[in-house]
Amino acid sequence: MESIYKLDGTFDKHVGEMKTPVPPAVIKRLPRYHRYLGELLREGRLRISSAELSKIMGVTASQIRQDLNCFGGFGQQGYGYNIKYLHGKISELLGVGEGYKAVIVGAGNLGRALAATRMFERRGVNRIAMFDVDEKIIGTKIYGLSVYSIDDMHDFCVRNKVDIAVLTVPKEAAYSVADTLIRAGVRGLWNFANTELKVSAPGVVVENIHLGDSLMTLCYELKSSSDEEDKK
Image (tube, rainbow, N blue to C red; front, side):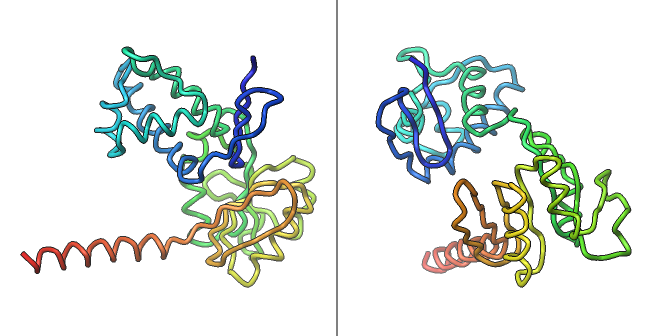
């Protein structure tokens, strides 16, 4: 019977059966599985046990088995996991190879940094353009990406059937830009605009990225580590 996997927090175990929610924490761990398995493939490894994978990832073997069982398991008792097969299945779950098209909105420092990275292509996402309001850079190219006026963004996204937009705009502009993108049919918003972007449009997914939160988490860990050392 055909299996259907989704990353909207649900998993159809079999066609026609009731959906079982997949915990958000499990979904968040999938890219880590994909990354580590990819490294193992490049090393020429063929299979791995949950115990071996747990040592590499810093996650318990039990947690790994529970995570993967949310999507059907993929392992065989006494054999472990076929690395190539598991990596391929997780790639499917993560939409790698779907040929998603992305644009970057905002050609400032962060937008330029994201234009420079090969991260998108390595994950099967094709960046096709950038948009900005600065007339000095409109019509130029940044790391091979043409920069268009934000006034042309709606028509461009409709014409090119853009799936994902990366927002590196000031937070004051985030909602108006998001509204234009959603009306143009863009379904995925990767938001770096330093504001918690919330939309209610059906089928639209927003991932809010707060770089400052990550830095503060690091600072907390440093302080906690220092406090523990002082107690010794």
